[in-house]
Image (cartoon, rainbow, N blue to C red):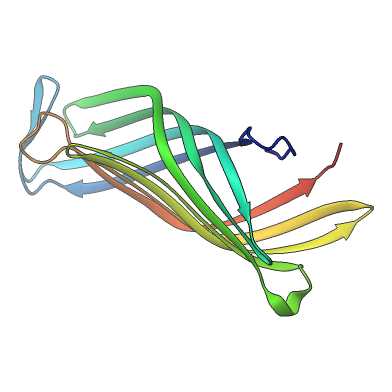
Length: 190
C-alpha cells in the first residue's frame, strides 16, 4: 500500500507486509548449544523458521525525465520464531521488535514502451557491530488500464540476508531467503 501526495516536505508513505516459512533437515558437523541443551555433532536435526515482516517506508522521491530515485528510512516490525529438533529434544527461540533501516530505490521507464514497462529496484539495509540485515529486490513492471483502473503486474527477484553475530557469540544466525515473486498493484486516485 502506497500513499503518494503532493505536500513537498512530507515523505511519501509505503506499507509492506510479507511472511516466510522455511523448514529443513540435516546432520550437524559441529556441536551447538541452544538454551540449556547441546546438540552434538553428527546429530540429525530438523529446523524451521517463521518470519513475519511489516515495513513502514518513509521516503522522498526525486523525479527525473523517465525515472525516479527514492530515498528514506524503513521502520521494520518483525516477528520471528526459529526451532530445531532432534530425535530426543526440541528447542525454539522467538524474537520481535522494530528495526530502523536505510532505504534506496529506483524506477526507470523503458523508452520504447510508452510508459507501460518499467524496471525497478530497491534495497533496505542496516548494520551494527557484527550484525546486518539486507533486503533487496529487482523487478519488471507492466502497466495497463482495465475498467478505468490503473493496474500494474510485476515480476522480480527478492533476496533477504540476516547475519547476526559470529561463531564466538552466544547467539548467531546466518539466514538467506531468496527467490522470484509476482505482484499485482491497483492504483486509485482520490
